[in-house]
Length: 108
Image: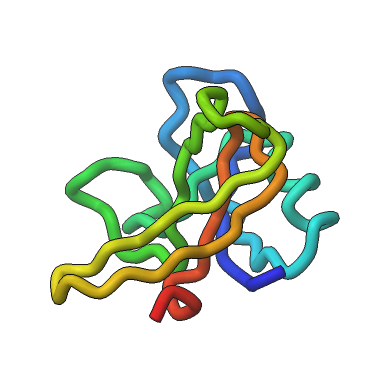
């Protein structure tokens, strides 16, 4: 698994939360499962307060990939097309309408 950063809240299910003070370096499935139980974001923000004005950075791309239209819904590939016209196809695999993170440096 690639490594990336998720910032987590101290709770889950609060639709009004915008505070993500706990920064986690995800390196394996166990890390991801632990953090995914909490409300989380795949970006860092000034003062750990999520808003478009306080965005600092992100080291991954997070997508909600719905592949329920595929012949085999447990397999999936995604094609990234870049501004220069080049493209790269990556096997994401075993998708069931969930979030997948792709490390930016692995796309080129």
